[in-house]
Length: 85
Length: 523
Image 1 (cartoon, rainbow over the protein chains, first blue to last red):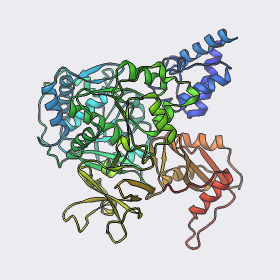
Image 2 (spheres, helix red, strand yellow):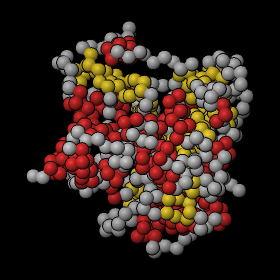
Image 3 (cartoon, helix red, strand yellow):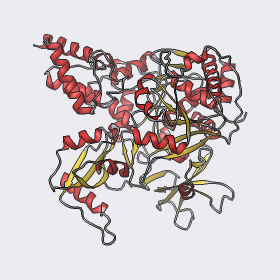
Image 4 (tube, chains in turn green, yellow):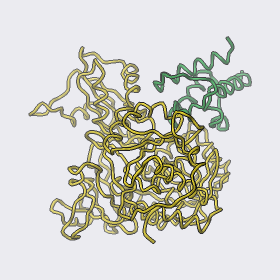
């Protein structure tokens, strides 16, 4: 299992706990459009990701394009992890 | 010109057919295109049997297609009933039944949750790909030529907006075409919204405040830019890129825009185009005002207040914000705010009384609810033949006529820009098999208005793990209604007679246990 898959699994577990959403969650779904995340819990997700994966995300990272899809968020985390390791 | 939004749109589309009216992530539409789409949509709706006065639900993501669906219903002589997505079953069912809704226009993302109501009302998708299963407006429009059969007068019903009350299910506020049209004129006048404005719209079109941005755009021939605020950097880059001049917000949006944890540096964005920022739906804190001034140094800041029953009531002129920061301001144009004592006489300056509003924005009452309508929509001997809105809210006016809020009429919890009914929360908490009694209340939280809190007792006298109870509630309630704070009681104090819970004492004891000061009444 790759790091990215692990990361996505951890994010999914968090989202399910936080939102109570029980439907399918695919890595490339836009979770804002789908209504799984709203403008409040997407922020919680970003803060969770920083803490859980011990990465520092700056203002430019915290944008919709990076956070609305699990695949792009996982990619961002991997990128920052590699840089900040 | 007779006052209605469809007539305003006809006029503006004739005057400025090629001007961009509305911009979203996916596409944009000129006033000419908006009129065409609205007219053809109205024809589609007539073809499937919509007759004048029929109520049509709109349950869609914020989009140009949503605006088109709203306008299409108005042009078809129907009555728009917004349904907040993710409202969850029982409330949607109530709105469909109570309004006597004949159809719901939804989109593909929401079809799944709305589908279960297909038995009681007709479903139409207003958006997305053509499907064989559901009638689809973009598909139907191809076969229809524009026809103008709009025949509503200003007094006719245009919309019903459901708003939570402190007891029971949401009440539908019945709005006339005249209310919408005059709401556009009044706001454009005191805000100074004009043809050159570009309104950045983070607001939802399920409520009067957001809808009013559509009406002002149509009336003034300005441009509306749709944006879903999730992360502040996206908003600020949109504001700079689109050269937005007007930004209507609510305190809850400001909290998010200037959330320190998200490391936003607004100096990186050129926000010099923003002429005004206006806010309603809660008090502006000193921090919020400072943040707005920091980010938008050239913008005028309007602090506003309104009852849903009358859309908008007061605004504080921007040059008075520093002198009277805790005031909600004075009456909007074409409306009057009265402060009345118990005998119906006007109070002296600084004496507390009930806020009563008269004028153009006063709506027609509650749909299908004569009892509550008679309570809040009443006459006053000084204004024979006229209906005024009695808010129940306690306010006073100072010597300059500025209004100050003292206390709300009801126990409604205002959280994240929503009005939440304690009764609705309690009903769901009580469904948990271990819960015996429940009392919901508000806990002040300046960043979102108030937190929803709920005290409860349990069958075995032991607390239920917060995570377990919240998880249960999340399956029943929209996120904003799930209590952030849960307080377990061994037993509830009871009021002297009739075995009623002493809500006041329960609340006080909860505050004491949470270690927070009870809310002081704002003076």
